[in-house]
Length: 286
Image 1 (cartoon, helix red, strand yellow):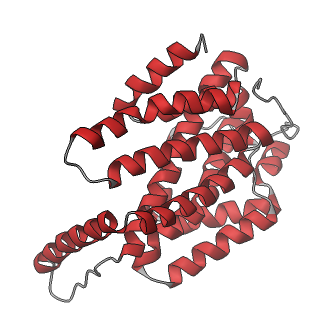
Image 2 (image 1 turned 30 degrees about the vertical axis):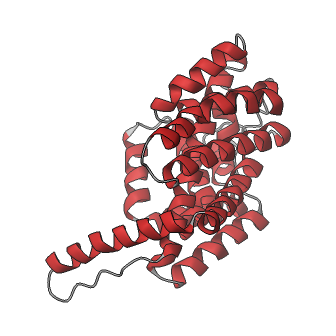
């Protein structure tokens, strides 16, 4: 925030560390807008471009890195314009899906190569598996869904980090207030739930697509858990338990987010705790 030079250096060097470079792009975009965000983006993608030009690596990883950075910038623009995580989350999922599908058409050979390599690994696992165990070989649909899911999750984490930085600088506590108020509207909830159920019915090839379309529901469920733990002044072990359930039984967590659209668990728990429902609309200074 001291200047474009400092931000460019962070974006350039941060490419060697998880989330830092796209988070720097997102922070500049949130605070200063599209033009400055694009300028920092160019420095952030430079290492991926150079690595592709001077090495023998295929185009898949550099393209995923560059596209992921662009997805983060677009999500930051959605958050800046709407000042609402709902629009940013839904837009992030749509942009990630569209980007992955476009990559599958634009660079089909690397995607096919990854599919074959993954298939060979699973064949080896099948040979070592107990008798009667069937491990299904993935198709390119599986790989493209995996790319979309990874881009969406990493872009969200980068955007979350950027928003946290922005809150620390200009609005302490604002990020927590934003996330604790996050709820999906009925149309968004039903759209996500229907997409997840449809993907589950299609089998293994669509499991990452189900994860992608259910990601907004998982984020909402996590905000419910954190808000309830804070309101009821519960110990951190309850959050650990929640994330264990998230890993081991994600459908239960998805159902929690779906029901919250109509029940609003947080307001009910706050009312029972003797506190008025939180209406802190503090937003980051854009």
